[in-house]
Amino acid sequence: MTSITNHMPTAELQALDAAHHMHPFTTNDELSAKGARIITRAKGVYLTDSEGNEILDGMAGLWCVNIGYGRPEMAEVASRQMMELPFYNTFFMTSHVPAIALASELAKLAPEGLNHVFFAGSGSEANDTNLRMVRTYWAEKGQPQRSHVISRKNAYHGSSMGSGSLGGMTYMHEQGGLPIPGIHHINQPDWWAEGGDMTPEDFGLARAQELEAKILELGADNVAAFIAEPVQGAGGVIVAPDTYWPEIQRIVDKYGILLIADEVICGFGRTGNWFGSTTVGIRPHIMTIAKGLSSGYQPIGGSIVCDEVAEVINACEFNHGYTYSGHPVAAAVALENLRILQEENVLDHVRNVSGPALRAGLEKLADHPLVGGVNIKGLMASLPLTPHKATRAKFAGQTGTAGFMCRERCFANNLVMRHVGDRMIISPPLVITPEEIDVFMSRAKTALDETYAALK
Ligand code: PLP
Image 1: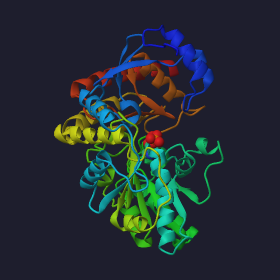
Image 2 (image 1 turned 90 degrees about the horizontal axis):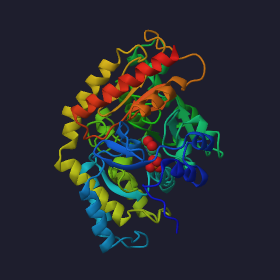
Image 3 (image 1 turned 90 degrees about the vertical axis):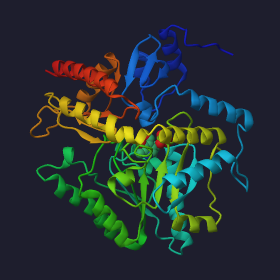
Image 4 (image 1 turned 30 degrees about the horizontal axis):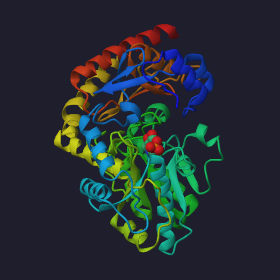
């Protein structure tokens, strides 16, 4: 057994990492040339790396560490559960208390009528579940031709064959034969990048009406569902204009198709409510959950399903499931996370403290010559970078160059702020304090100044 520890020199860890560890969404050339930043521990909103740097995590890991790092209660619950029942499955007429308790708690927290939970190990798995579930639902109702699912370009719904197909990232579709048949993508409601001279209101309405056009093109009787994130996260934190969601709800209702809200990022307080669906005012039939469900302390995801769909699915044998569906340790940890979110009033904190403080700080940063505006909902936000604010112009040359430079300058200044193309994205732990937001803003300003100077 090799003994590789936090005490090894960074360069040695980086060399082993590049030699043996295949990373998601990373080229090995990049890893070999520069070496990964090795994170050794974390507490609150701060990460520590192998060189001892204290880095403010403006991304909550991957949009998931909602309650912050290093909560001993979470470790205690995991340890207790591992001693009592480390694993048992939920197949073939068996169950256990953590899965029962978590499903019951989620039914309480979810919007009215969403009372049933199918567990998965991740958001990708949960969206695969959703795809099979909506098609099975319609087939069981005697409409097997209703198999088409409509999604949006630049959406992210996961990396598996099903969820990657539901997603609308073309660079993902270029690898591995995606999308699978029967998935269609309409344009996203990204006014900043694509709205041209239209008002946000007109643009939001026009983009929503693309759903109706697509339904009519496919034939209304052939469409099973529409899937969307209440606020598109990995696509660049795209907050739809106010006219968008009411029109989507009208169209979904008119044609009787199922609405799947992917709450993997938006759920569990990120937008100031338990679910982004509440924030944007929609009534989904199914919600995808993961990430903030356990604050990332354990891998767990799932689908919260409405009574009407669950009744049909429960009446047949749904031949679907994962070894780790409702994993007892993950479920117990998720339940503890929900307790912390409730008992510490974290949603109030987002609505009244951290959300307004982040908005105020970013609005000040928007005066920076590189920043074209602020997109924000609760504690998820993006800053589009532009060479010319007034026209929302794109940079000449390769998209993403400025964003990448800014991300690197952030890292050098001990701040994690990711980029999607030339948009900087922000999603800190929900518990971040106004003082920590001040630190975020000061490091971000330095990074923007350095990027601006380098671009000149
Ligand atoms: N859905 C959304 C909206 C996501 O942002 C993600 C991941 O970022 C997923 C699904 C996939 O979740 P996972 O990475 O847990 O498979």
